[in-house]
Every structure is written in structure tokens, then in C-alpha cells.
Image 1: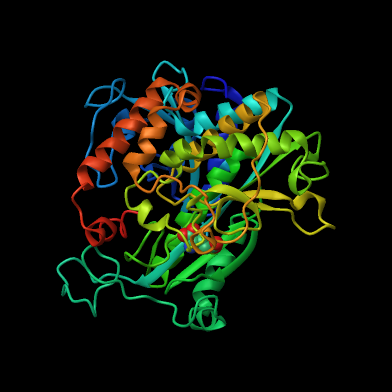
Image 2: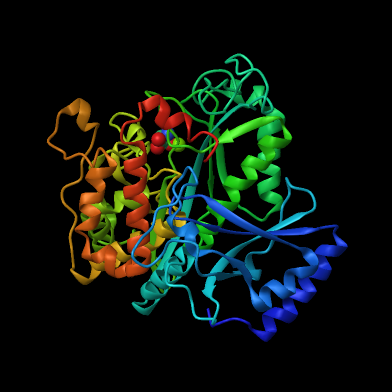
Length: 467
Ligand code: GLU
Ligand code: MG
């Protein structure tokens, strides 16, 4: 993206604003996602949209060192009360919000006040890495899965702090909505209007839903969406989450995407499906490598696999994520790959023989405290390195290593362990660039220091309302 303002974009924004105003849209929410995976927002009245596209909207860089409880740390390049950035809404993604009448949404890119790209912009990082792939003649298709747990909403502040009344607020036991067994139709019947409204809102917003189903834990659902380019897919991940949240509010329910809602239970994943393409053909298919991968397809996945212990700092960046990332929960706790193996961190999906485009890999060791733009960019950087180094995949793993007792290494089982690998990753440091790398690391270290002595219950209860 060239430095704003762009004249054509400003005039397009005027037309968009007129179109939105005619639809009674009064506000445009502009989001970006911070290093804790939280979508932060500035909103403008529709009438100010063209102004925002021309000049941007101010926002402090300090949010790049915010922890998930809204306290701030500091880092070498970013921190403290000084400075300001400009948020520029991406008009190509401008979406009328189906579950928030009167509102539209657009993801934002962040720039310095002098118009140069902001080095720590996570969306800019994802775009840079996608461009790096394009320079090698490669294209990524990505699709995020979204898992969430629905509870009855908490009583208003000042209400009885009673477990019977309470829902998702910190410190109270969640009261799950959506009765019945895992993957059971009972849950779709019980929350019929709610699930329909989720589907309808996503369709109205142009999000192509592949499937929706009740998941393993009480009140848990999952929706998966069609693959798209890496930046678009990350935008969709944000939009899907906020749409589900909005539909939930309209139904008097509360949606949480927190990695774990109650310690010991199966958590919420945010798995990423990806495939690598060249000149319109899927490199995960049609080759003579493992599971029919092409040579570059295999090398790309081998690059991801090699970097996984460090990548996990990005894909499971909150200490609570390690309560989720445990064996025998399909969360991807083992450092291995395997065709259709749901215990492998990297599950390979050959896809139906008749659907050549469908072969893809699913990276499972991800939860929703991960910033989807950072995940996309870091995965691409690791995959491209695999191609440069001509890496090959080790033997695939089948079965659950926790049951078969096969000698398969675990991924890091705590944030400090993941951070040790992350600090040692020259690849991720180079790809992220120092300001973003340092800020991300400071936030992760701060999050660990803040929660080091928390009980599992304290760790997760604080997250139900934050994510
Ligand atoms: N809920 C599981 C997780 O924590 C994933 C279940 C699935 O494979 O869809 O990642
Ligand atoms: Mg699932």
C-alpha cells in the first residue's frame, strides 16, 4: 500500500459514505488487532469517512505494549505516553454490519504521522510476508476456524454475584447456553434462532461459511469459512468473531473465544487452514512427495514444522493457552505432522480425490489470543524459509502419541518455554522487524510476569470477558 492519502481512495470514500448514509449507517468502526490478539477500535461518523481515508485517525502506539488486562508494559521502541499514529480504514473491506444496525466496519492499516508505514503494524506485516511469497511466484490461501462458547449473559454491574444468575463475568462459574451432547443436534435445536442468525449475519456480510457445528465442550460451537488470501483471511477472522459477539448480544447471550473457559475442559481453538499455490495449481497436491505433496508444498510445510516451537509464542501467546494446548484434546500439542491426524500440530488434509483444490494443511496449535495477522505473516515466513532451505518433512505420525506412547516431542507446554524458542528465532526476529518483535516479546513477558502466580481458575476467569 502506498503512503496515504490517495486521491482515488478519498473520492471512493465520499461515494461509499453517501451509500452508507442512504442505508442509515451512522458509524464506521475501524479495527486493528494488538499484540494480545485484542481488536482495538476507533470509530468515526459516516460523514467523516472520507476525512479518515484522507488523513487517518489518531491512535497511540502504546496499545502495542498493552497486556490482555489493559495494563501496559514498555519495550525498546514502543511504550509510554508520547507519539501518535494514523489509522487508515481499508475501503476494500468496508462492510455493513448485519448484527449491529447502523454500523459499518473496516480493518485499519497504521501509518506514522508523516505517511510512512508504521513498522509495528501487524496487518502490514502480514501483507509484507504475502508479498514476499508473491515475489517467489507463490500464493497462500488461508482459512480460519472460529470456536466459541456461548453462555447466558452476566447480570448488569451491581447485580447479584450469584453463580446461578451470573454468566461469563470474571470469578463466576459460566452458565452455558446450548444444551446437549458434543456435536449433538440438540444444541442446534436448542439455539436454533441464534445459530440461524449467526449464519445469516455472516452471509449478509459476504463471508462464505463452509460449515457450522456444536463442538465438544458445553455451549461450544465452531464455524469455518472459505479460504482467501492471507490478509483477507485474517480480516475475516476478526469480522467473524465480532459478528458472533454481536449476534450473541442481540440474543441476550455472551460469546467467549478465550482459549479455555474452565480449566480441565476442552478449549477454543482458532485453527488455520493453509494451502500453497503457483500459477493456479495447488502445491499441496499432485506431486510425488508425502501424501501427494509437490516438492515446494512439502518444503513449505517442513519450514513451518521446523519453526513451530518458536511460532507457538505467536499462535498461543497467552499463558492460559497452555491449559488448552494439551494432549488428547485435538488442540495440536505434539510437534509433528500427520495426514488427518487431529493430535498432530500440523494435520495434513489430502481432501476428496475429485476436488483438486481442497488439499491443505491445518495448523492446530493456535488459539484466539493470537493476532491472526501475526500468525499469517509468521507462518508464511517460516514456510518460505523451508523452501529456501529445501527442507523435507520427517515421517508422518498417526494416532495420539499420548495413547500410542510413540516418542513424539511435545510443543512448548508453557509460555516461558515458547518464549525461549522465540528469543532464539532469528527467522522470526528478521521477519517481524525489530520494533514489532521487541514489542511483541515485551507484551508476552509482561503477560507471564502478571499471571505467573495465578491459579488456573484465576487465569481463565479473567479472560472470558476479554476475548
Ligand atoms: N477445541 C479443540 C481445540 O482446542 C479443537 C477441536 C477440533 O478439532 O475442531 O483446538
Ligand atoms: Mg473444532
